[in-house]
Image 1 (cartoon, helix red, strand yellow):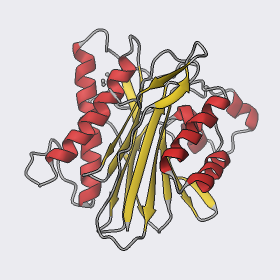
Image 2 (cartoon, rainbow, N blue to C red):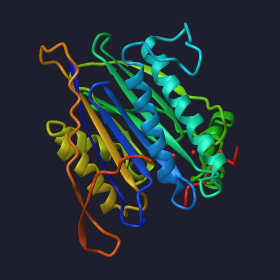
Image 3 (cartoon, rainbow, N blue to C red):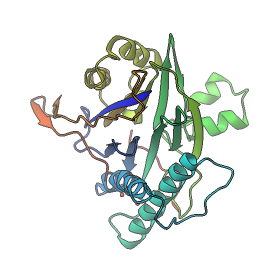
Length: 300
């Protein structure tokens, strides 16, 4: 089995700059999506710091000869430890950057990462915030991550809330993000892969604009061409309003007899309508980093 991946990011139709970042690391079989927040364009700093810190840690620990900044948890697999540690390290770096600069104070970012192991035939997922991971398998789509949001926290504590009570809760408040404090709780999970599985990592600029069913339909129609799949997801989110930055990374698990991982980082220019209505070529966004603040609210 092997995993093939592709990703793009788009500013959307109503924002002037892109605070999302993503990374597809072929040698590490790792994909990351981060969605930054903060004034003075600090959000793009936070998201880029997250992807860079996670990727750099994986590169340094590829040969098991680097010093780990946190204790190795014997109850977790090697893959889970690497993913957990990389995200916690990114959180620390973002937090430290934010405390050293007034312009960056209070910045943060969500993150979702997917690490593929063909040796174990498993996909390892780690996330903080409301950037999501989906899995499309057969005739169904499943959200693999749980949004760390005020709404979800209330629902967990009060599952019998009425629709009217739910509607009164602010929908743009997340309760967990990288950079808010010097430590962060990271959700981890492991999924046994099957040939044909497609995993979609995305910022809420995608999941907030199109439904899970629409994501499923696009995946089923375009799974043979991951570049086209990413572009169609972004185009659909823009057709529905493009209210936020939009980032999508898709990973397809294949059974072709090869025993090596083959994640392809294919990142051509993305053509999008600009905020002025003209068309321009925008390179796929790379994510850029970093404080305790109140639960962060996304701009509405």
